[in-house]
Image (cartoon, rainbow, N blue to C red; front, top):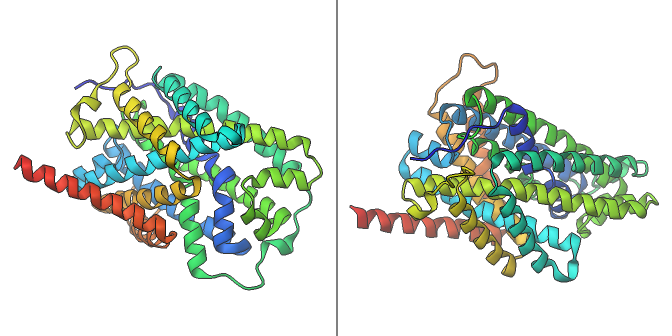
Length: 411
């Protein structure tokens, strides 16, 4: 079996994790989350989503160090639980992240050319796929440049904002638990990129050391950035205005009396979301590769390019599906669907981690975190908007049915 090249160190893995997360939460998710939970509720939901993500990250890092190969929880579920658990995780990841890629591509189109958003989105998918097909080293380099640009633009938006008004951070009507859980499920979409590091298990140097170090560093940095931006956006705009805008950071700098910065923020949004797309597409491709190697998907998708050492057929197939979804999809609907299926993916991650037992070398209670992560993922998944829950679990059930039929014919 052809293997992928091990080229990435800790810094590269952290940068790819940052590139996978930064953008979605800043430019897409805050508005629907504020609509669901209000001001204080948004901050509480962000903390909840961050904690669940931390639990998942701990479990992912332990499992990725034990099984340093492409595929993430598709591999862990097969090895630690049952082949069906692995299939369900892989299927959930592929369909959920495909929807996420479509949402990111549509965001690029909306910011660059609103009148031709779908056309621009398809072109963005084609361009990013072309970069990824050149090899993972080039992907890491491009993502590093994008991450620096994004952080610079976010810093401009924060420093250019007017003084934060504290009373806009609170809601007189109080916090509804259901709204907080819905918002947390949506906000989880913004954290899920750290799985990109785990899916690179076959391409990082010294994975037992690199992956456990890279995952919490990337997640902690992103959580700090999100909290800062959420406080600024709420303090300047208030929950109602934040919930009604599609470009909250543009609204922030405009409210500050710096409309000229709006163009910079829009450009930064385009760069940020392109960075997310640049990291998401190969992650889906590598899970597709792992599933194809075990014949859970067509075996032709298991090919690795002889020169660039990337799963070129899998990545081209994923890009084609994303382009189709872009042609008919909706950004907010894609986010909810993606969150639902990816939360199921992480529920299987935590269930797999529970089978590893205790780790005497770690100070954190890893088994407790895995149990809390498992419960948290399931609770957030079922509290998402009802159309997202029905669509997400419906597609998972369809995949499970296909799995059962195929196994029956093979028996």
